[in-house]
Length: 228
Image (cartoon, rainbow, N blue to C red; front, top):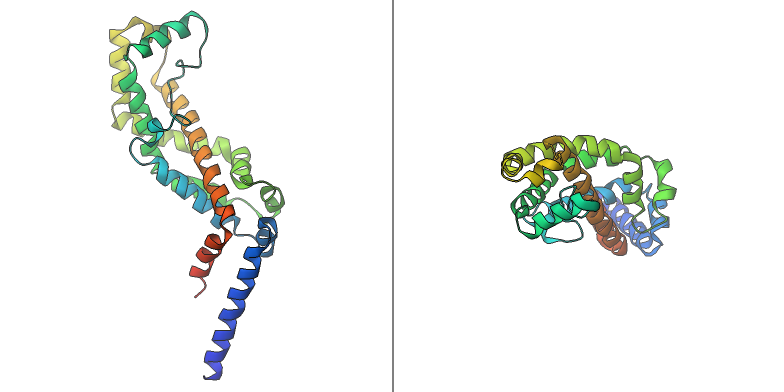
């Protein structure tokens, strides 16, 4: 073996050995030792969450993240009762499915938004992030929620239009007085779908992050891929 080949071999062996040892350490130690691939970890978590939620029917099919209209299940009193009855009659079913599909469509376009927010995390943020199993997700939610909301909302708005949810709302308002009485507007619907859609994304991202932390060797393997 030539001197150059031996040097290359030793370098690769050192990198693999160091990372393998790091993988056996608590996640916080691995994170701090590597200058932490927090960006890589959260990028993978957000991509995984968005990929799953962009599958047609994903939002609607999961009761934990299913999006409801702002007055369904969230309003009390007479109005809530009237609109709840409207839902039971199936009058709102088509619209509710449409807004969930719109959230999924927007999720499929949202990766750059989340990646940009993740890139703003600094090394100084790491100690707080590594304390809990979904610390990165929680940190991102507290530090970038408003910015993510403002950038996700136009995607939601476009998807609601493309999938005909706004036309459905207009039609229902003309046909049923109880829909008119709540004063639900296009902008109001867009806002509530964005609110609930973002909740769903963070819900899934938390699960993805916890899964990645529980399998550090998989995470290390992804790091290796770019080294050779």
